[in-house]
Amino acid sequence: MAVKIITDSTSYISLELKEKYDIFIVSLSVIFQNEEFREINIENENFYEKLNKDLSIPTSSQPSIAEMYEILENEVRDNNEVVGIFMSSDMSGTYSNACLAKRMILEKYQNAVIEIIDSRSNSMQLGFAVLAAARAVYQGKPIDEVINITQDNIKRSKFLFIPDTLEYLKKGGRIGGASALVGTIFQIKPILTVVNGKTELFDKVRTKKRAIQTMVDKFIEDITKHGLGEVIVHHINDVEGALAFAKIIEKCIGKKVDIAPIGPVIGTHVGPGALGIVYYTESNL
Image (tube, rainbow, N blue to C red; front, top):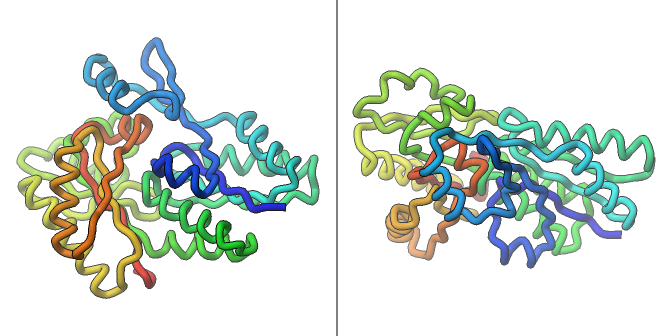
């Protein structure tokens, strides 16, 4: 018997880490007017090129209950315990479908051990929680401890980001508490965050340069008080901007900071040109 970690494709964990810790990825999809792609099957570069050419903003869809059921059943048949960690239930039906599939599995396999966790976020804020779980499994910890470590990581993490425009969040219905900015965005650069599973306004400034510095200042404030676990810089089709952002953080902490691209599903709702920082601390924020 082993503990198996499952997450969704919006975690954006690197291939190297997914393979090292044997993390199973269930894919969300993006839907253009005449085409549908599973997120794990389309390269970011191809997607954003298509996004720039297409006249409409695509939508996204969660994995079906049937797909979730099949994935969970395969693990239960292999006599594995399962910890599924998924993007915020306020942002997607992925978590809900996983819970429904779990209930169906337990009706058939009454001794199955399945825990489904709502990460209350996405991207590497979700990814870091998944990695915390996977590393605990790698160290041979029992499932109860794996769950506690995962939930503890969620309490110690933060995601700050600046979209290039609010139009994608507005049209995708994911704008949350930042909705007050729509229509008054002229000469304002909003800094957004994720609070209680929803996109919220953290601050607003006049320039992108100032927005990046504000995110850095908050990061330094948090790690000064609570210590640093890990940090990563996110970008949506803006490698150059992400590398420059990472260099600023590297000067502050004295070590290399990796960058990670955000894929089609979150990219659909936030839009190209966004930059962000995800980190978790050693003690609760």
